[in-house]
Length: 284
Ligand SMILES: O=C(CO)COP(=O)(O)O
Ligand SMILES: O=C[C@H](O)COP(=O)(O)O
Ligand SMILES: [Zn+2]
Ligand SMILES: [Zn+2]
Image 1 (cartoon, rainbow, N blue to C red):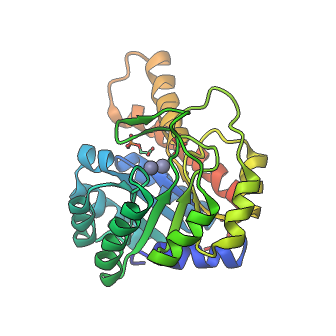
Image 2 (cartoon, rainbow, N blue to C red):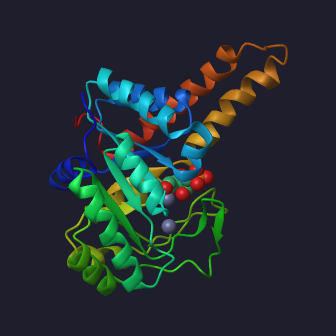
Image 3 (cartoon, helix red, strand yellow):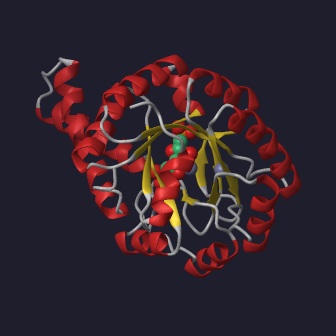
């Protein structure tokens, strides 16, 4: 199957009240783990790469591997740029064959964010891609920039309404208390804020920083209108567990296939669990 757009995937998710998992990837084993999990769960899936991920693996490698995965898949697959902040990088992704991009303008004042997002939408939607934007600052680290808890700023519902009216964006990432990276304790999500945003905005809503968020909170967020959920840290930790299991127990092992293979299985299991939790299993 050829790549699909966010708009196509999230429209069905809204209609059937589930969320689609968006999983970050930086290499072949992570791509394979995610795609195999999607096939076994009969789940639509979003594979996403950040600017740092593209820098590490190479844009052409990521596109080529995901295109091969999508071609052989029997479930719908989207390839999405995560937290794009550079217009040039976004244009490169559009040209390279991505089916969706995020423009992360959350660090700009509202009107600047709107204007920059509109510029990305003009280029990306003209090429048939979907665009995700962000309003409100999510804590944690993205692109090596760390946003402290006090600087993280929850999304203002009225601003969200104004933003989507001005931009007609395909998906909106909102800040309701999550943060990128591992949590020290259980994050407390502002569900009242999510409910108010949902009452004002019909655009599909995106939850970043979802690794480590409790299952009940995830279910409630989906119930209240979240339809794309981003997972990176849980995959990184599964990868590391898999590698360390081998290197700690079989220090003599030097065949990368015997070290990365178990890591792939660990990641696949985590992704399958997330798909069941998000309700996207059996929705392909
Ligand atoms: O938001 C994310 C990617 O954009 C991932 O968040 P986590 O670090 O919680 O996995
Ligand atoms: O934004 C957070 C994602 O997990 C991507 O992180 P990264 O920029 O380290 O690749
Ligand atoms: Zn951001
Ligand atoms: Zn994110």
